[in-house]
Every structure is written in C-alpha cells, then in structure tokens.
Image (tube, rainbow, N blue to C red):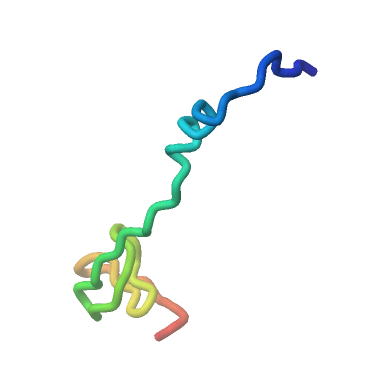
Length: 60
C-alpha cells in the first residue's frame, strides 16, 4: 500500500475540512397544527403533508 511521501500541512488539512461543519436543521411550522416540522416532510404530530393528503402517525 502506498505511503504519503510528505506530510500535509495544517492549513491544507483545515481547508479540506472547512466544508464538513454541521448545520442546524431547517424548520417550519405545520400549517395544520402549528407544530415545528422539516419542510417537504410529513408532520410527525398530525401527519399533514399537503391539502387533501395526511399520513397516519403513531401519535394520533
């Protein structure tokens, strides 16, 4: 197996890792029940997806 010939500098390693930071998840309020949910996902509390479509959840 190949071994690196030279050590990578701290700056080069940190530039590569600059894009690996965690981001806060985006949240919106459910138009049906008002609870916080992720966009483009079914509400975990009431099962609302879009007008005329709800998903059965274990909470209700």
